[in-house]
Image 1: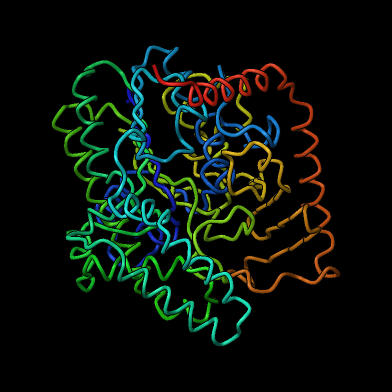
Image 2: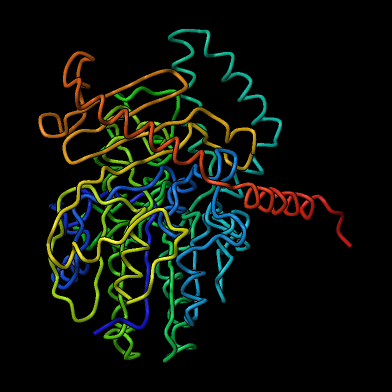
Length: 491
């Protein structure tokens, strides 16, 4: 049976090793684990880039994130993408994005959708509003000045840093629930809107994309989800303290490590809430009698770091497995579930593979290729996965996007990481060193290094051959229109 509709669910910051169907021991994904029995499970799905603004061009447009140039972020105007191609093929299209500014109309993600809701016009958390007001007070300005001065005072400065942190915690607004602290719409709100839309378009074939932010920092899971994983009850003030402490820039990894387990418990609770909402989504699709005609894809844009290599969150330059390896589950009605090859599968190939599953042709503009045949035949493939980004942490500023390139070539056993800005080259053997703690010396595995460097060279040269002039002009014009509209005086 060929599916008539497609549901794509992407989750921000979800690591592959924190879902049960890929081996995690904590019960955070019981529903998805049950769904895995009737789905294709991809054990080594690799993102196209890190973080979000470098990840989604591969997922939605089967394009490397820097293929149009480092200064362009997101999807370019009129770019052929999974939603645009499905819309052209007669599908109704909708997307509901949990207030991630990098997956918004500004960066081209609203195009090709009949309905697009990014929730960015809604009021954010009360805590964020409080701090934005406090940051302008005389007391706050004075404290920040003293804080900067204290950096030069040795132990006295360290003591001041700690006292100032505790002062900020006490000065924060009182909170009654974890929900009031969350800066993004919760997964249940996104699923509510999505199901309302699906009910309005049935029985037409549809493409639905949901992007959920629950596991993104700050980690404020639903209390029900914490109970479901057997976690100790956490008060809102304690959760705020843990998140604030985890976000401190004045502490080294040794001091942060004391609260690592407590922070991960909040992160896991957020994943559990996503799983509970996935169960509700599927149950409602069954009630609408569209589940048996719908393919479902569940994946993430990138992972999250918890001090494995001394870092937190998801910086665009480390390229470690906890960031680039994500869960990927594809359920297609009428196809018996199975685990596909353990070889790396790039997100670049996801959209072509899904179109093949829908019995549709793959647009020639896509850079990836379909592995649907290999999945069904349980065959492997030999292509390394390429992950690319720059060291840009603020793509809202066009000049910051020209930061140094970072490139990762990942095959079944070896991983090569190139940081062009500092000239760093690291080669890891993932079989003997799966935690990536010891890069191989330069005189070891020279043929492997040469092979992966050659692959990197061909990748960069291939991107330079793409004629992106038309797309670049339209993309820059779109950004200028947005800037001008914001600066225009109100009527």
